[in-house]
Length: 255
Ligand SMILES: [Cu+2]
Image (cartoon, rainbow, N blue to C red; front, top):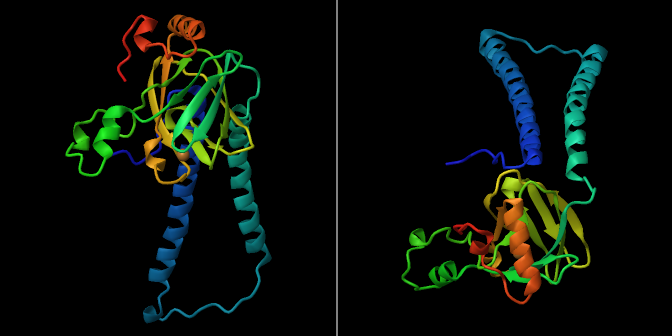
């Protein structure tokens, strides 16, 4: 059982995780301090032991302290957070730009500057098993609800930029391992980027309640070694109407 957020597979996702943990530990220290003082005071100065409440009003020293200390904590937290935010919002060009469009209930991926575009929908096995009275035990379906027919293929070790939008209602392209969760909104383009170091298969989901089949529009990204990606892209470009098999990349990618 995983309670914490995943560390992810990119430098940026590790940075985000680091800030998340830093804030967590600051909260733990504050929590222990505040609750410790409160519980101590409640036990030590209880009425049954004859404690009498102090009657003073206003204390300038105290008021300055409880303003300055939280302010310092916030400043200490905001410095690394701002640095990471600048990385998140990095808009320098990448090697590749993919337009991601949300549809009820699938994703469309367009490699900008090429004719390569395709829809990525729930895989057939999951779709069969999810039907009422299908008689199929979902636990026997590999990657149940987290598999698609045509995954988004990107190169590893290269910067890939995403332009995210929607064709109908609001969706959200959520890829926990990349540290990306961007709303897909009609008429708007949100952008994001990723540089995956390790080739692999990564899975995510739509994270914005978008109607009946919201749970049935997962995301699968296959990050291929750069040479394999180039080969895959060549096939895709020479026949944009047909999605090239991933085994074309020289290796079989288990999806
Ligand atoms: Cu959606």
